[in-house]
Length: 369
Ligand code: BV8
Image (tube, rainbow, N blue to C red; front, side, top):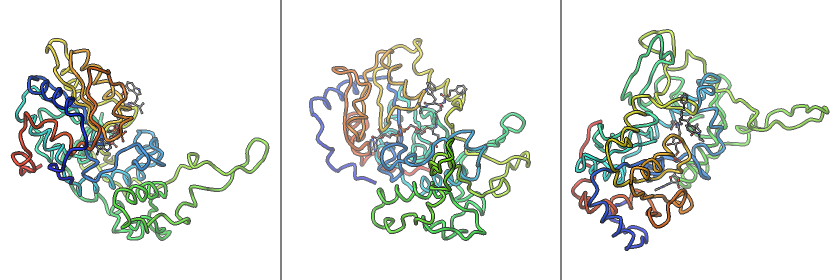
């Protein structure tokens, strides 16, 4: 975890002073969080050159259709994400936002992240809306006739088939499992290996997926309309995990369906209660919003991408914190919004210091979640 006392990257002192003056006077603040908040905890973001989605067919792993087509592939993806999130630790940005919530009842965090790091940092839950769900919550696929839900399931792997140590080769991120074992998707392995090689350095560089692993991606050629042999495009190849429903977590209530991660996939509506509670903070009846903090998000996914504008329409000024200057500058109102470019884990504690005090007073407070 980055050391919050390390000097914040060069910020414009006048902008910081101007922001902190408004912060001190603020009674109602909304924060919109994205995967960049957890980057310093070692968790991959979604987009960008080495993101989780890079090279991964998002529609194979984060949509209802992808889950219907190959629930095993989706469960492999989410088992990996659960393991990584469980190993990660909240960083100073998570703790700082939790402290702001404790000190300011009019503050709420609207998080797109499912990694459970804000709850683990002790963020008061009534002031935290996990818009896209949580990796450690599960639910029966049959929400209508069964509706079983399970919260806080922290088990490392939910079934033997999802336990990488049960297929040690697969865990090497790059060797081919023996034919008998369920084959992890080479596309998934390639994406994970790329991420590891970037975030975790040389320790993983020597474990790139072998060319044999990636062979299915090239696949057999197919004949086009003129009978010409054309190599199949990766995106045409629907890789199969080889896992069956019996290999996946079973619903203990109805005992007829499998469980799924209780996260929101593309094309799925947000949980209506969560969506209503989040949007209630922009209600005209609540009067003026003072500040909207947009932290570590590419602001590409709706409806969260629209919250900053909704806050502006309620009178709020917007402060963007983002490691990437281009993403930071998107949809910014010049002369009104602030843009702070840098690591959220370093900048957020610095920016909020006038209200939350020095990190020694709030960092890593013991939390049981
Ligand atoms: C819905 C699943 C309607 C869990 C995710 C308009 C209105 C409504 C919907 C739509 C619309 N237009 C399009 C849609 C459909 C769709 C959508 O938005 N598509 C996009 C791609 C155009 N939206 C939906 O489908 C949503 N549903 O609206 O329902 C409906 C109503 C009725 C009936 C049916 C449907 C559901 C969206 C939820 C999708 N699920 N995740 C999981 O596996 O995680 S989205 C996924 O992207 C994650 O949740 C993630 O949080 C989210 C957003 O990404 P970011 O967090 O921003 O991450 P990213 O990598 O993109 O960016 C990271 C940023 O951090 C970068 O800017 C980087 O520079 C920065 N950064 C990096 N390191 C740091 C840093 N910053 C600071 N410090 C650092 N150290």
